[in-house]
Image 1 (cartoon, one colour):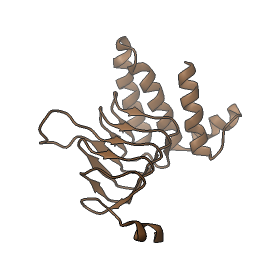
Image 2: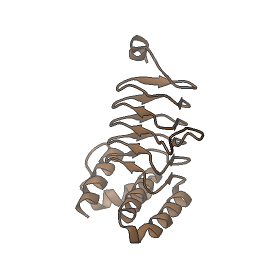
Image 3: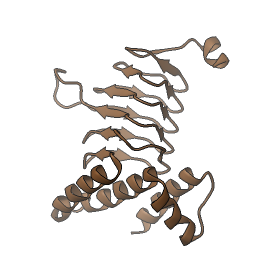
Length: 182
C-alpha cells in the first residue's frame, strides 16, 4: 500500500502542478477532473492486477474507468508515477504498453500493437517526461526516448530519439533548429 501512496501522490502533484497535502484538495481534484479520476482508477486497477486472484476485479475497474472517463487502460500496461492526463477521453493503452514517469498524455492517445508484425506481441515503450499530443497513435515495438515530444495527430511507427520533437504521419523527428523555433 505504501507504493500506491507514493505513486498516487506523484500523480496528484502532476495534476495540480505542486504537491497536494490536503485530503480535501485531493478529493476535489478527484471529483472535478476526469483525468485525475482516470489515473486513480488506473492505480487501483494496477494494485488489483498485481494479485492473480484479483484479476477479475481489475477488469471490472477497467470497465468502470472506461464508462466514467472514456479512458481504457488494459490490465498489464505499466505506467510510471507522475502521469498527467488532462482529458482522458479516447485514451487507450494496450496490455504491454510502457509509459515512464512524468508522462503528459492528451486526449485520444493510443499505445498499442501493430497488427501484422512478426515476432509476437510488441507494444511501445515510452520514456520518462514524454509529451504525447492529442490524437497521437504509437503502434508496435517502438521506443520513444526520455523527454521527447510527439505532436498532435502523429502516427509513430519508428523510434523517436530522446529529446526530439516528432510530427506527421508517419511521425518523423523535426530538425533541431526548427524544433527550437517551435
